[in-house]
Image (cartoon, rainbow, N blue to C red):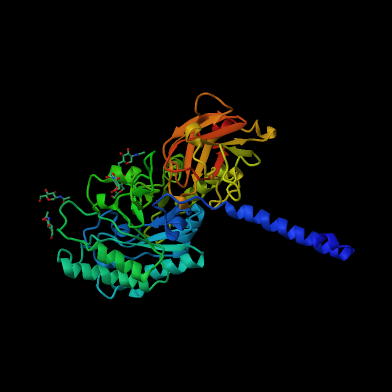
Length: 494
Ligand SMILES: *[C@@H]1O[C@H](CO)[C@@H](O)[C@H](O)[C@H]1NC(C)=O
Ligand SMILES: *[C@@H]1O[C@H](CO)[C@@H](O)[C@H](O)[C@H]1NC(C)=O
Ligand SMILES: *[C@@H]1O[C@H](CO)[C@@H](O)[C@H](O)[C@H]1NC(C)=O
Ligand SMILES: *[C@@H]1O[C@H](CO)[C@@H](O)[C@H](O)[C@H]1NC(C)=O
Ligand SMILES: *[C@@H]1O[C@H](CO)[C@@H](O)[C@H](O)[C@H]1NC(C)=O
Ligand SMILES: *[C@@H]1O[C@H](CO)[C@@H](O)[C@H](O)[C@H]1NC(C)=O
């Protein structure tokens, strides 16, 4: 055929055909680099979306705000609930200041007072003087959140010290379920629901029908994340000071946990490397000493909030930060200022990646879309994958960033490592070396969605190598970043 091609037009056609054939075969080569197999268990789409939020907000507000307490008795008169100028959109200023994309409201705390006009009890805002008894905090909260593009979550306390049905197993479980129905069908899409086993030592004995509640929640809101000590979607981290274990797996065995039982904290804090269930931890902590607003308390100083950030987001968790509105029905301006300061600090540290512009190489590359350079593209959904060959198990997996010469003088004191957790959490032990030095500048166990290492002092090296010393399957890293924390000891000397 080609031999008989004499005219220029025919030659052009032949060249075009050749180009198409070449393009097809190179895209075929690309297509052969399939993603590696996941290592089970892996997160659901909703869990993955939640994980990438990193910081979310909690709002504790209710009868306790007006009685200056943390745990009410259930005997408070509804007339005590009288915020003078409640403005939920001002609460969203607090969420925006913190950079949160999801806001969780306490709709009912242990005292049983409902912030929405529930049809199933008289103990609610309907019986209060606020908005002449026609108010609905849940409605104002969810409307204000949506107006700002924020997703919403709800906490409904199982322990109820007011309701007379509490202690009568069927009657109370039906009451609780009826309230879940109201909250999950009347206020649009709800992204997270919070359950806990908190209960006083002398509380009436009462069995909660968690399985019936969970399955009903799923039926009413199919993409919601259910939080409790043992998930099913998100777990408690085991403390209320925002501190995950330095080893922190997203996996546990749910069968090991009874909600509200003492003694499970350590297991929740570190997770289980052999856990069969993907139930990542959420760190709930208040910016003030208490969960509710008290006149005598103020927000934690910035260094403490940054410590919380490193110990939660920096250890594979989502941080659920509580900002309690006051008796006026507003978040204190000083608290909002502190949240803004916190977000500005996080941006100052992580807004600049000192690894940008580096050349990336690795022990091997799988080819196609899985290049080592993916750890520098600022995306969570692209990642470096090593070659399929198992040969490396002897030499070990590593990835190295070589910073441009101009960057050599720019010191860093934070190393950020991220796994593509969509494919399962894999890294069991890792070490970080600078300029081929013999001693690791940082080392640790798990990585997960995000692991942040603070170095003792800023370093200025050009090559940074992360060695994945031990892992469940080949490591898949979505990011390696270098940052300067000017708030850390010695960090401001640059
Ligand atoms: C629980 O009950 C005991 C015995 O009645 C009492 O001494 C104790 O103060 C109670 N504790 C609380 C927290 O109410
Ligand atoms: C509470 O009730 C459950 C079942 O109704 C029972 O098994 C348990 O022993 C009771 N606990 C106490 C402390 O009475
Ligand atoms: C956090 O709380 C746990 C127990 O609740 C405690 O053991 C730990 O020391 C606390 N950590 C910090 C940093 O306060
Ligand atoms: C969790 O389950 C796995 C698989 O059954 C098991 O190998 C592991 O030992 C369990 N973890 C604990 C702490 O029992
Ligand atoms: C502030 O007052 C509340 C209520 O009276 C009390 O529970 C709390 O311990 C106090 N906080 C501080 C830091 O003293
Ligand atoms: C609540 O906070 C708002 C905003 O800072 C403030 O104007 C108001 O006075 C505060 N109310 C109380 C009781 O402190």
